Length: 576
Image (spheres, rainbow, N blue to C red):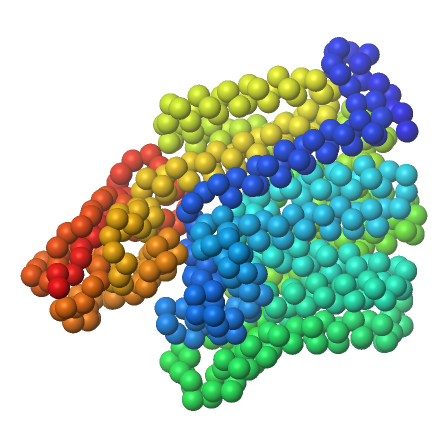
């Protein structure tokens, strides 16, 4: 379909303009490919950034080193918190590529990209009209450029795997609902099982909520009793059998085992109830006394940048025209908002709230926004009403990036940032102004912010991370156990990831083992040296490093800017 050419529009001037869908789709493909490159920045860092990521990597490292792929062991103790699937995948990556940061990030990044691919395919299924491909590429562009999804592609947690599993399961079960093909029942059940083995039963709520709301509104109540859906759920549970077997072998088969100070702990009960509904009702072994119903609404305002304005306008427009849509279009609206809204409300009711929890439902709102953008473009390719909103989003992101750059005060970084932006502006001038403001500028702005933060933190941690720099100094020494004194347990785990050596965290100096005649090293703050028996230790390295890497954005920028958060750390060797 050919739309009105913008070349003669008085406000857009003599620029190259997108005059039909094929050219717009080509632009969208180019932007998506560039975003995949930006997301891959996490593969070039030698450092695992987040504390949770270090813990998850340590669990996978134990699997590879011990050859025990059934038990989850952390710091020598049985660990009961998350299901096994992400650790199995990461351990396989470590086994193939070695224990290192890129090998940890790679599988999570691939699952994020799988989520994008499934989002593209689901959009094609939801919109079977002549503009389905345009809507699908818009959905993928939004998916890849949502700030919190970009962040999950680097700081890998369970949600990175859930993006791929949940969207793939939803895609195949939508096909099952529409076409009744048994192969979609199988594939949907497989990905649902992988989601179960990543975060537990609650993931089924996200996968099925859109169908439940749709069936209720369409009065298709017979689907709740149809054999194929019960078979799909049963097959998903059966395919999650490896998780249940692993939990039974590690915990239920050993009721005398001490876990978190208790005996008689059931791993299967924890998986089916405590880790899910126990957290939701704040009654399980892991609780959070805080929580507010408005928490995730506030998170959405920054996590869904640069598309939060588009989402708001899409909801308002849908409210106005919903009654004028065809039954198929109304079904799509109900399905998407049901898939997003049910999980969003349940998370908001829960007291256990972390900002990255809701990232797993952002693909549904991305599809919703993409449909709205496509319909607006087909009606008027100048996108009236959207240009100002997206210009504001771009300006906010650029202002934040500039503020971060000025805060860090790196001349080279500022120069590079300015050069990248000028180059991007020159390239963007080949695109019509409406497309620049609505698509290109927001995408470039969020990519610039994400890229700047990723590169800045990588360079900062290379210089100031305690575990990384201590590991570099240990490379010249003979292999031996490393004792980490009175530091965060994460430090010992991270040090083991970079060295491959045995490490142990010791809480107090008086708890240090008798090291006489032993080959070992000690990592401690300089202020703790007077507590040690001097004749047992000799210095082999030292530095001013940061003991706690993670924190808020202002703290991370402060760490990049100056040395106020650094501590005097000493590396000692036992004198035999």
